[in-house]
Length: 137
Image (cartoon, rainbow, N blue to C red):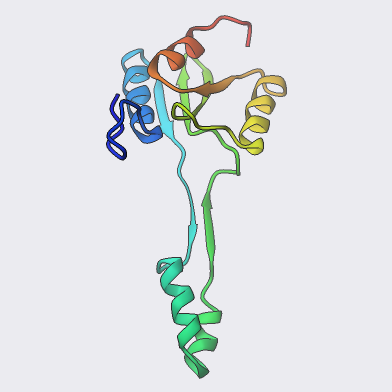
């Protein structure tokens, strides 16, 4: 897969997620992508610039604008695949991406505490291997 960002013969995580979701859907899995976000209702950079230049009453109003976080817990895998009453968690990385400690902990918890399949995948082939692996999880 060609990475549209840098023109190299690599793939982006976004491209890989889409390709994996399509393939798992073809294999009969329900897949979902987990989105996580945070910010102000205006872009953070604009909010910080406004706070630097605005004074008085308007500045105190800006200080009361809430910063929000939404989505799953930190470290939650990018994709979930569900079929036949089983759920599999897939953390998608590009060719050089490294998982965070939170992501590794989430995978470990899903495997050891809940008996789920969970792992890091970098391609459609990796995802197929993870969902087809019969290691007892």
